[in-house]
Image (cartoon, rainbow, N blue to C red; front, top):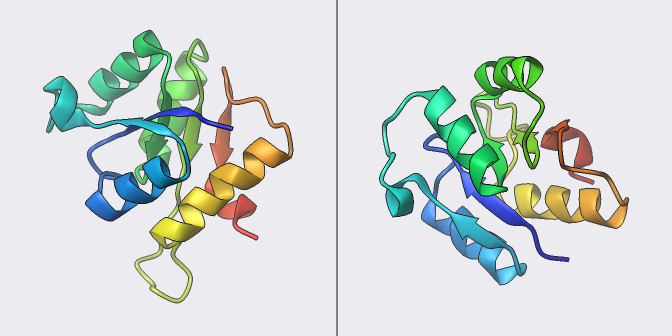
Length: 119
């Protein structure tokens, strides 16, 4: 299954972009749409208005935005401890999205923590 995903500034990495695309996802970046460095609300609004699932490594701020407005294509959060032993790799992130898809989880209007799906 293919998802339309928006990587916010803190989630963007060339390797992650390539892995997501290799898994069949359509990926949009802040640079492509000219909003690099803008505030979280701008990224949230852009993804929502464009029908894109927002992927972020800034979970607290985007969880708050989701709680204020659940009219979006979905938000997927990655929590990090700055510990390479526990933090999700780019491959873990792609696998977790695939696990959500396989489980038939609804993305639209919902917020999911990817860390819980990286098995």
